[in-house]
Image (cartoon, rainbow, N blue to C red; front, side):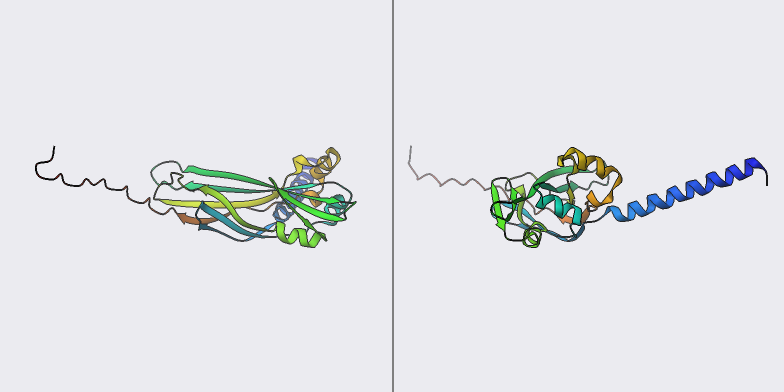
Length: 208
């Protein structure tokens, strides 16, 4: 075998090895699983309920216990499907969940917006974090066309809000990467109620 053929074979083996590594990393990328997602009508509009499943890596658990907060993001999209033109994104929402630990009180905290909850253990906090309930994603009165839509939801750990050393480690370590694939499901917006009909009382005979 000539030297050029040997180099070519070595290069091919290297490329195959890189492709195999990429396949392994891609298979491990979706560390969060979306178990269920649904929309329900409420007095305020449309609310999302979703259930997620994942295991917090020991390194992330130790980071929280040592005072490093973790920021999880739940993203929701509602897209109007149009066969004659490009699909239209009707709604895009984002909710941030902050998981932290208070060493003096020895309590885990889960907060989103102005709402904050305390837990005695990490497992209790994660149990609530994995269950999204009554998240208002479409307010009442929003103009949604009476057409087929596709809803989508996902959860991920926001690595950009971790301390810089963790961000650097996340480039080469999958232990700091938590993300789900988009969970998509069909949804059809209910038709808008008919406009009220204006009625007038008949005028009395001889009236002015």
